[in-house]
Length: 341
Figure (cartoon, rainbow, N blue to C red):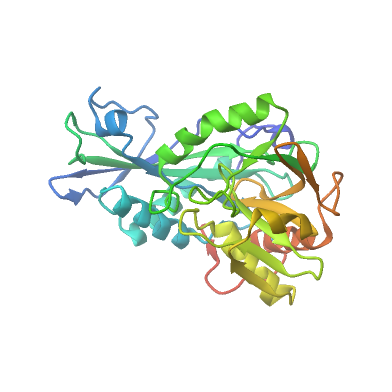
């Protein structure tokens, strides 16, 4: 297949319109059969539920070209499951999980010319999302919805290589106990925008959010889960019912135990013990793992022994192993890789 004439090596992490996207409408209590369309615009009422009461949720995943030339996606069934959980929490109709995976495959096949070649460092990013589409003026769920998936080729998250991040302990709360922090609702990200802009203005790369109840326990950043490594090389991640269950983080925990033979544990982590860890990283779809070199807690610096120049030893092994699985260089656990073409 002939690829699009794109400078893959210099592609940024942004939106590039591709040829096709998937659309399915929910009306009269049922989803229609869905379709691919070339139309990238959405025409809905000014009073649509998505505009009035932020009734929207989304997902993010990637399609890759593997070392042997196949086009694959990584664990799309977990994205389907997580979106179903988000929809239920927001009183939106669940888009069937099997149809979600099929729709992802349709979009990738239709835009195969936009899937970057192996070795370019670029991938095809997929954004499934759902919106309340009919007019809603009283505070209540919409009765009509639209489920869509668009694709855009993106370059590596870190241009010019990985540089450890500097974080600040946030004064803002990301999510309340029993709130919506554990689902991928658009409103969670809207609430984080002021905090991230403030952090950037102060010279930091991201925020470390603490639990809203006691402000003593580590939760996550605005868009990624934390992963820590102890001085005796044990991998630890925060446990909380108000953080998003990252697919990348869950995969990294399996990699730690089954591929690297390390102890790995999900548990509550206090801010007080962060200073005792050897390594720290942020994990998510976009960058897989972003190393953290320093966290500033209201003027008090927590500097990790891994330093500010490169990934720590264990973080690097986790990154290399998971990306090796995604790119077909390392055999994947059963069911992790869905072959598209």
